[in-house]
Length: 181
Image (tube, rainbow, N blue to C red; front, side, top):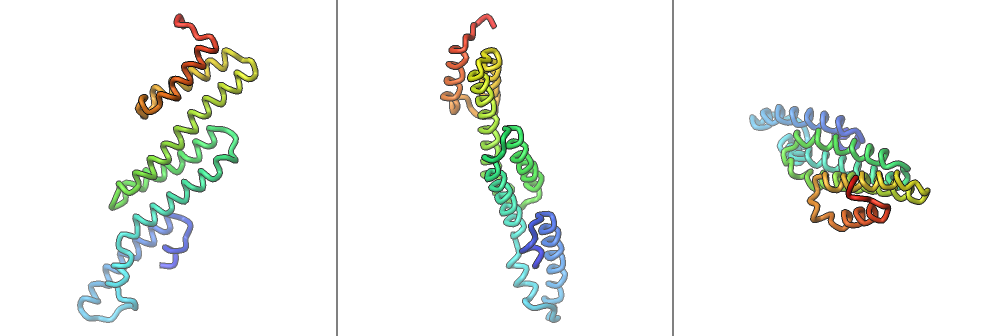
């Protein structure tokens, strides 16, 4: 029980939790027959820890997401930021299948996906603005096209991103886009 409560490693917590629940089920058989086992009683501990597995996963993944977000402003490249958040997302999806209430992780998953999306878009836009500032018109135009392609082909409804799309399209026109391209 101490490892479940104090370990920082989710896999350790979960294996110890599974081990605890397995042993409590075995001890419950003795308790039901009136044979003394442990104190507190296995039935009490079983009720106390029932469903705690999902909470352990949720707490760990939320902390990992918050830690990745906290480090995000420090990180220089968009790629590094996305990689940090992608690791949390992969971990979430791995553990999601093992939960009793899989839907409990949906809001956190949505927050991670949204954060990744925002960072990727900002990466394209930042590269475009930087190239524009340096006078590299073609490179800036290419980056704005990358941003526009990203916006139009991501999983988010274009109606919800219409402001971004119109800003990027106006920048493309400003930099000299022609329809023959």
